[in-house]
Amino acid sequence: MSAADSVQGEQFQARRYETKYASASVGPSGYLRNLVVHHEHRGEGHGHELLSMITADADAQGTPLVAHARDELVTGLYAKHGFAPHEVPGFPAPASVQGIRREPRPS
Image (tube, rainbow, N blue to C red):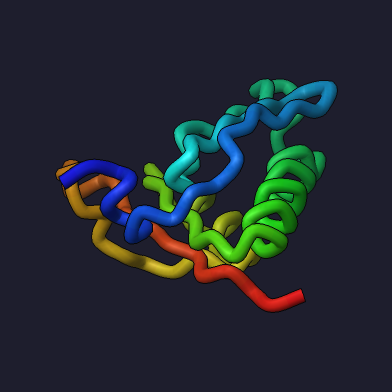
């Protein structure tokens, strides 16, 4: 099973998101591949800014998002944007990594 299967084949516009100190990319299946904030600028809201852009696009397209979170701080950031624990099929992860999913919200 692939990442595309994990969101039931729905197609999301693949895109890279960037701010001055952060970047993220989302694949066409709605899999959030990475979200990186420059270490000197963590805690300044850049991750929230990126997730707000990503979730707005996903909501507009009616696409769920899936990702993996590596620690409680990151899991908490995602939770504030509507992500909840979820097994990501096709991507077995070590116990230290949590699969998460966010359903689209109607506009």
